[in-house]
Image (tube, rainbow, N blue to C red; front, side, top):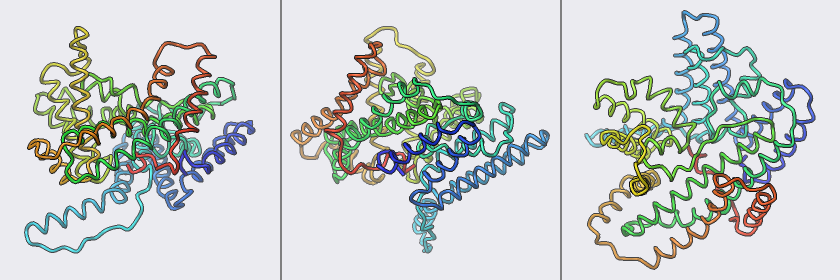
Amino acid sequence: MIFTSYDYLLFFVLVFALYWGIPRRSFQNLLLLVSSYLFYGWIHPWFCALIATSTLVDYACGLGMGRSPARKRPWLLLSLIVNLGMLAVFKYFNFFAENVQAAAGTVGLQLDPVTLRVFLPVGISFYTFQTLSYTIDVYRGKLEPRRSLLDFAVYVSFFPQLVAGPIERATHFLPQIESERRWRSDHLVQATPLIVFGYLKKLVIADNVALVVDKLFMLDQPSPLMLLVAALAFAVQIYADFSAYTDIARGSARLLGFELMENFDSPYLAITPSDFWRRWHISFSSWIRDYLYIPLGGSRSGSRWATLRILLISLGLSGLWHGAAWNFVAWGIYHALLLFAWRALGLGGRWRPANRVSHLTAWAAMFGFTLIGWLIFRAPSMAWLGRALAGTLSATSTPDHLAALYSLATIAIYSSPFLVLWVLSRGPRLPAPARSILVGLCLVVLVLFAREGSQDFIYFRF
């Protein structure tokens, strides 16, 4: 079940009505659990077996660590093995099997491919990291193990953010699940703009720009100009698409009395790689920082080259988290090298430019490098990327300025609602009537320009 389907709208209305008609928190949580499993198993019911396994194992591991504080490590290892094992089998088994076969072929060995003919369970990357944060925090002594299986199961499977985040920490979200919730009118006031903006970003911006993106990345050897337009188009699409999911998730959760974390903070205004990762997919980047980068040694690793090694491991694995393909790994390594280069230049951490000119220069440089990163991320294959970059360096491709200008105009037209959204979310505080009018205008634009036959959210693939 996806947010942009009529099934979800009917589903949410029914859940909302039943939820606030129930007086007791325990019954509300039971309804949320049943609803979340219905939501997740709507197309493929067997997905529910995976999330139930992860829930039961980590619930037991948390209790085990609470009862035997001196023997926490085996329980943590069990949690890591089960969760990462399921992720490896269902998301990466075919990828590694195909690469082993290819590597064997280079030395003359012929291996029959062994593959798993299963669908990738949507959201498995997200809820795996979410539930792991619980067991790791219990292991570290930052969180008391929970005794209510119902509350913990709701934490793992909460349907608004189940499939594509934000990845909520147990320290932030479990207390909300364990607290009494009462309906307040400001729930509706806060949720409505989020949901409207989310649908606008997805159906008007992301899905329409996707048509341009798909055509540009189907070109066998694009010109340098078309390559630049393709990167810019995908930058718009992925930000609109992913932030749209987060907005709808946060709005849906708010209508149920919960507050989910913000996942984006104007990422394309970043002036350094560190700044970008503080703004982009915040719940994931902070997870990688707290549970992988810092435990490996982080910036205190002792030497510059040790720091580089840790960055390559952390960002390389974060790239692999996005998908079982080498271009995702390359994207992660690319960002690791950017972080390292900026730090080597003394521009890491919380560096800020001295004046407006240096600020604009830093922003332009970072935005350009971000576009290169998105080109790596979206490339159909590493072979395609190699051909495209080779053509750019040789500059032998045929100019296609008219097609590029047409594509740019299309991107600009469909991206224009971003300006309204920025005014509403980041600009000066507008009076309530003015904000209501702008929200109403967004609804009109949504009705008039929404693309028919909405596509799945991009991060459903991850």
